[in-house]
Image 1: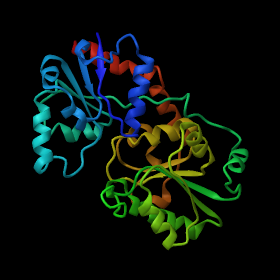
Image 2: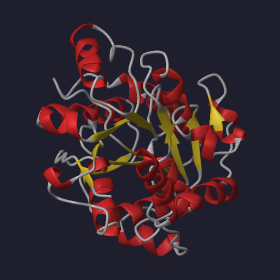
Image 3: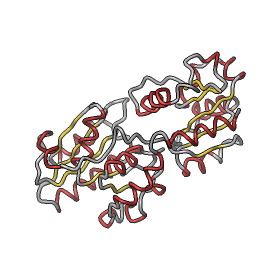
Image 4: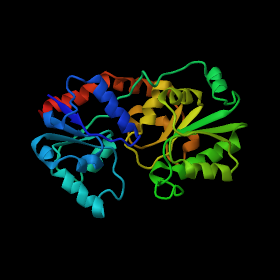
Length: 305
């Protein structure tokens, strides 16, 4: 059995997944699509880059990360059904996405969360030293958000599915209730939330694009991480917070209900009452660590052949 995994090259987390799969599964991976038994379209929009003679002659697994409200309208709807004819089985990373996708395709769908890498993300116990290294006050209540929240078309408009407007509301609450608040941001396209924080004179530090070693340190500096999205596939930050034992609260999106305690999940009416549960999230996340996190994917591919 040989698997060809599609190329992304978008500086996105899926590029990391692809690299980790190739590195850890050399015996069943191939860099040559002609030699593959299975094509894994790990990002659905790259399917058009694949020659149709291979899509019709190989088994095709297509990963759907999440479905947005307009994903099955107009041109996107046409593209979905054009791609659907080549897909043998869909892979989704949350039960919510599986339920949504079942309404639009008769193809089989399997739910498997992406693996987590505890060689990259792990707990560092001395938070004080880390904060000193990163020039973050030891006295501050530090809240993190590491994602994109601004539309790429104008670098001003909020990417609403990520909930940056909700984050601003939550940060504003903490700014009124905490003696010293610091928001730590990372990732591309944070213009919207930075503008909103500056309007409200809320202190923040922005680490735009950093390596995974520094990202792990940032998680370990936090008193709280907040996911306020309306729609998500993962997000992978939930697993990363769990592995680093970073306190986390989240809206009920993606894999949140499968990893977090129910008391850590909120809606905007009750976010004040949400409570992190570090031990529950850590316990639930560790079963997806490399190499155990690859097992269900390998089973999927073997059963397809």
